[in-house]
Length: 298
Image (cartoon, rainbow, N blue to C red; front, side, top):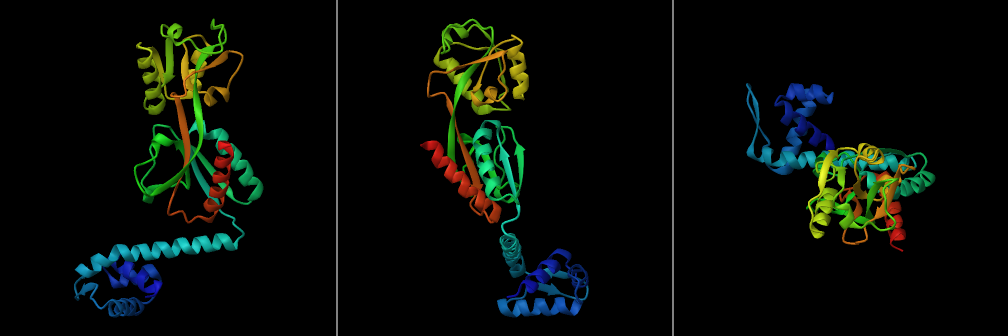
C-alpha cells in the first residue's frame, strides 16, 4: 500500500470525481484510476461505486476513509520530524502558560535557549479559567497550568512543577505589625479580586478561606487582569489575595505582601503535553522541563 494510493483515494473521496481528483493531485486521470484499482485489489473490496453519472463511496470505502487519513497524517508528521532532526533540531516550539507559571517556565526557556539557540519558541498567555483543548485541536506543544486544570483524559501527560503560596496583597500603608495576616482583622476590609471567570481556582480558594474563618467577604470589585487588581489595591481601594508570585512580579513601594499561614491554601502548578508528541523540538524541551521539575523538588 503506497502513499500515492492513499492520496488518490482521499482525493476521490473528497471530490467524488476522478477528473477533479487528478487535477488536485497534479497527475493524469489514468493514474488516479490505476491507484484506486491497485488499492481495491490489495484490500480485496470495492471502495467506490462508479457509473457514468456519479461516484460514491461504498460502505467499505466509508469505513476505510478515517484510517486512510490517519495514514497520510502520520506520514506527514514523520516526514516533519525527520526534516527537523536532519536540520540539527531547528524548529519551532509552541507554549501556552498561565501567569503563575512564568518563573518556572523562564528557567526552562533560559536553559533551552542556551542549548538550542536555533529553535524558535512561541509563548502565549492564557487565562487560568481556560481548559486544555481536545488533542486534535490543540495548537500548543506544552501547557503550563494549575494541576486542577488538567483534563480528565488519557491524551495528555504531565509533571508537577511547583506550588504557589497564597498571600494577602495590601496597600503599603496598611496598618499591620505582623508578618502574618490576621484574617479575623481583615474580614471587615473591602476585597478586590481576580474574577471567577479569569481564575476559578483562585476564586474557590479565596471563598473557602473565608468560609473556614466564618465570614462573607465584602467583594467590591472583580477584574479580569492582574494589573487592575494591583493598581486598585495600591491606590487604597481595598485588599486582595492571590498567588504570591503574581504581585511579586510587579511589587512596588505602594504594595506589601503577607503570606497566608496555611498550607491548605496553595496552588499546585504543572506542565502538560500531548502523549502523541512528535515535534522533535518539543521532545528536547520536555527533557529540560523534567530536569527542572526534579530540581525544584529538592
